[in-house]
Length: 337
Length: 155
Image (cartoon, rainbow over all chains, first blue to last red; front, side):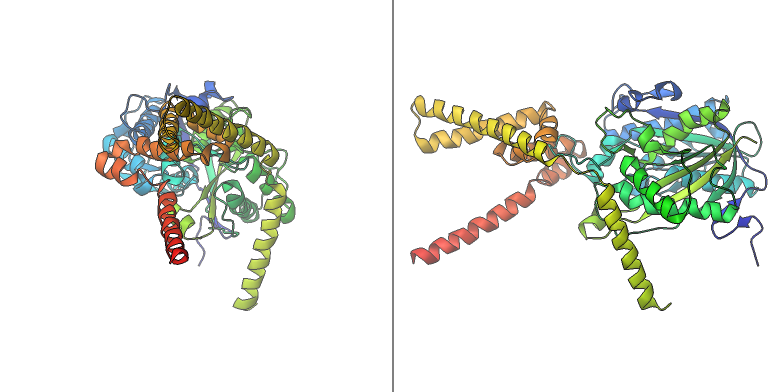
């Protein structure tokens, strides 16, 4: 017995591809100094945005991004039927607390930095399955909430190494609809957890690159598409180091997506912003997609995009217990059709 | 392929990937970091020495001058942390600003600032030593061991 809409081992094809009818992104001060400032909907002037703690700020960022994404089509939060959201914090409090105020049915997700792709995978399946007409998929991260949870206090004088990455302060949301206009999600590939035994917390790109390679390779195998089918294949937050590693893995696997291959973590910042290997965090790929990338699709600069958000599925506890860092990546094919 | 050979293959693949990562990963600029650590760490010590000499000159004895110098250096480390400058210094100087007593002050004050929003008991109180704690624990252990050694050698 084969599932009708499943192709190959891990790819699910949309019978009636859902539309990305609108989207929005909110970013922090550092992200606004990068090359994409005009493509984000709102820039926070500081890291607190009139809130009493960074956690509260992240909740506000996510909540306002969701509202903005809907209001970009003149809709209210209650016009959406389901909210899918996730973030990096323990018990995904940013998402749950944002959902508390949005007041529509909510499913909280955790896929580390792959969450934006995870929420879009599930959202598009729920729409194509005929269960919903309009679903909001979103994700967020905040530099200082992530730092204190995964690393050091912000004022701690530690030296970063060149392979380390900078967790983005950003949130992104897309409104997926059964009908409407806009780019459409044509297929999704759900990734496997891949662990190549990496345990360097200062080189997340290295831990996640094998998962990205596996998902992208599987996507092409499953769909039978040639690797230059897409105008752009963009990974989530591999950073410069992870992207180089992914390139090497592509050569080993015989996949050659270059030159149309990049990474949100590499794109988000200017090289001179002191972010070492690049950006990371759920918000990194979320704001790049729900900002510059979808805008380029709207303008027709990109017509076929493979969005592959990547996540490192460790916690501080697993790291202290000597576990290696498992990676995951989900692919979402977005096309103007 | 049996489970044994599958595991061997996986290990071999992980090892191969590990080599690839090591080849690709940029190396930290060790020489540059060492020079910065030397300059900044040295400067911190020079400042400490200037304070110490001044205190000796105004007539304090050596023990009191030493204690007061430590107190002043800890204060300076804490102040620079509170002003948000010590982390920038640490990014440049690495061990040069971590090893001196000012770095210890930084570790404690940074934690105190960080966890203040969770309140004074479960925030500041519980987590103020989250970074400096290991130094204290093993410092105490070392002092006990050295105390025992001294006791045995003297008796």
